[in-house]
Image 1: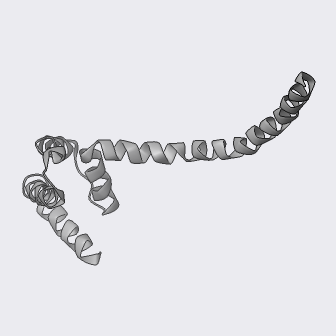
Image 2 (image 1 turned 90 degrees about the vertical axis):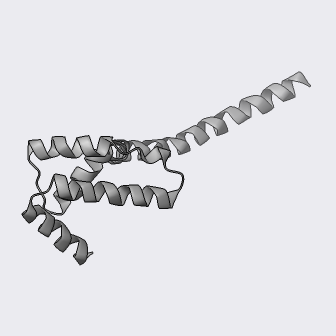
Image 3 (image 1 turned 180 degrees about the vertical axis):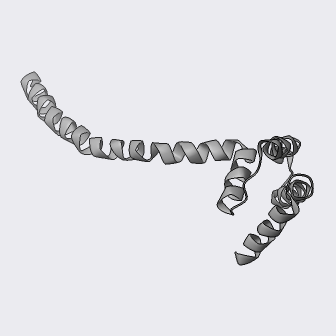
Length: 119
């Protein structure tokens, strides 16, 4: 009887290794997406970087001084402390207004408005 159990267990070993081989390609797929995921995570972690990416995609290039001012303004806002989605949206609107008034040049404001209306 012990021999039967031993044989039954040894027969299951190749099947388990075949299953592991079948899972191997699936394990590699997330690694290929890792750089894109790292970029998304970086932008999600830093609201200033996320906003800079947004402005760059709109064709708005900020000077080093403007970037420093933007980072100062963004640091004042704690979106995690907002009670709900509506509060975060209000906070975001206030932050964007402050950035437009205190960071952007008149030309950059015009570009921002033009690009925003195109959406």
